[in-house]
Length: 283
Image (cartoon, rainbow, N blue to C red):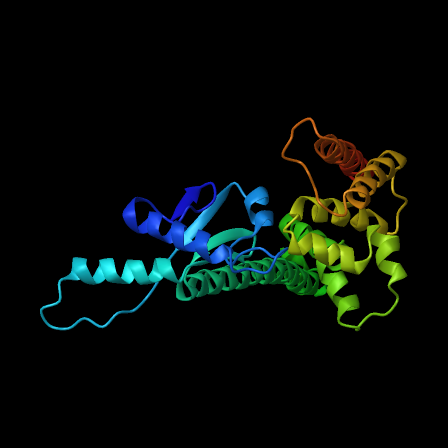
């Protein structure tokens, strides 16, 4: 249950008794120390508190559930204390706080698993395109099957080439993080950030920034010069990431991040369209 403000010990007679007990106990504290269950930092920092109580109670035959609950609630209140779970200020008994702690841990595990699934999906999609390219290339190069070669196969090969030689910042960062690759400067040269900063973006699920890293890297890995307009837009975005320690702020439509994000994709798409037109002209 969540309530605004700082806990007052409940309402009514029981709550009043609890407040009185706490006040009398505070006189026994050594001078200069805060009484038990008092933490001014929490009071000032948080605008709300999660209040929780949990206790298993034996129920004998003939016991009235409301009377049992009333006794249990009083026991919970008497043993309640202040604590912190994750970023939340909580007030409750040990068992109740323990429940919130387990929930917080499980939520962190779920978020980690979601991130892992996202990485695996990206790697899997790329690998499938590479394998389709291998099958299409076989059909293209086999004399007996070359007559079946079509524009669809050509597109499959092109997509496979892009997957094989394009940017994949998170997967490449994992290679350096695991020690499989050792030339860490290569990450900065291709992506503009160290592998640890790329992994931080992934932990923060900042997939928009990762897409920008990959888009510029794909041009560079394609062994062609990055157009000046694209390079300038990319550098602007990277500098904002560095300035804000990787915390992307695109929610505000007027923010520097949003403007830099949109400008990069604008010049990138213009370059992509220009190259597409050039390839068509050569055909």
